[in-house]
Image (cartoon, rainbow, N blue to C red; front, side, top):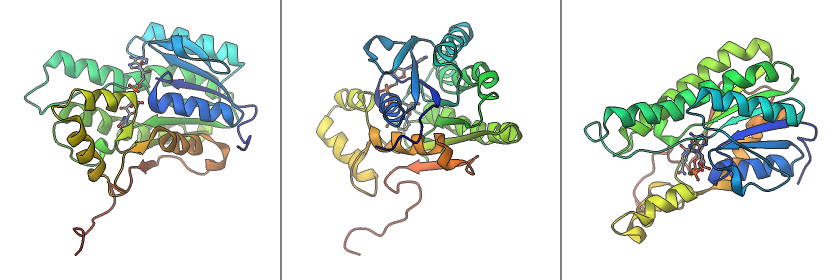
Length: 252
Ligand code: NAI
């Protein structure tokens, strides 16, 4: 593994599981010092530094970012990855759930970034990467609330990129398809027929399988790295072709 991130300092929210954990491990493996901010950081092992934080609570996030930046000696990379899901059409989710999911998935990024910006401004390689989703760019059934939250993340990424480009802070997002993480394992476990559900999810992505957490992490690490120094305001799809391809049916 290259050590292209030697000397850089990173925070990954939601870094105790799934895409966030894979990202934190990859950044650390490439030389960065990495702090994980999570509701449940108990399982986070060295060299990762675990901090308890709820991105839904401004005081909690501000304190955790400050402690993490102190411990790391500054901050160069922020990965806004913490997020929660919701299923259903516009008829299914009560207002309280709409407020909760938007609060975590959208305002969580706002709160964490607000706390991190004073530290990022002191970096000469500052980068923010938001974990967005295929749900921001494709209409998926039964995902009205979740999709609205990720559509907001995509627009927020572009606006943040414009606001901070002259400060030398790059802002991008990744749009994963369905990724094989504990979150998706839980969704599959709760399906009436988990095997049929997995087959359907595999088939929905043109490359015929779920995305791995390591593949999503690799895209995040690229956007976070100095190698992407001329890339800002982009959304990088990691979805096996789901967003961009229009294939003919097999055999035709
Ligand atoms: P996961 O459930 O495996 O991990 C999410 C982590 O975020 C957990 O460690 C959890 O404790 C933490 N978290 C949740 N709410 C939090 C809060 N309020 N404050 C701090 N930490 C909190 O989930 P996964 O699959 O790794 O998802 C990570 C991100 O990727 C989310 O933003 C999700 O929307 C996005 N995503 C996931 C896809 C998938 O198919 N798994 C596809 C596209 C995007």
